[in-house]
Length: 177
Image (cartoon, rainbow, N blue to C red):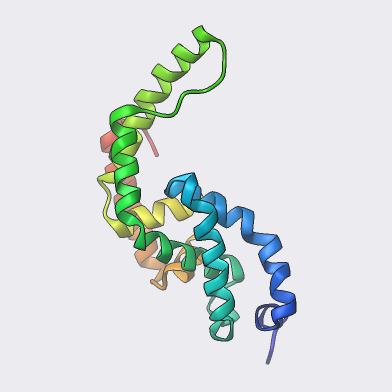
């Protein structure tokens, strides 16, 4: 039986509605994981790949969002070295400079630098699978079921990776995550 989602994905004319509904969310997810310079290109590539593979979409395996996040995460995997370099660079240098008043900028930069450096170093220390799960939950706001569908892994694998990652992040940051 063909569902509404199956028709939306399969029909090239209707696929543009999916693009309109999810492009910005996918772009933000990619931008958080990689540099903003490549986020727009990779988000567009995500939808190009999804469009080309639309006949393989199976709503029974999960919804549109997890499917798109899965495509985006695989593209990010191709750019994983850049992601790790970014986290390591942020761990060394801290976040970019803002446009507030001088005193506030100094306080904000010092505070943010410590936080971003520690978090970036902690994220770089996770395995690829752990980092994918953490960032899909944190940035994509996906449920465990959606993460499982996005990555093509079992629900239990999502839970165990997230549990291990939380332990590593808690140990590295000294805070409850």
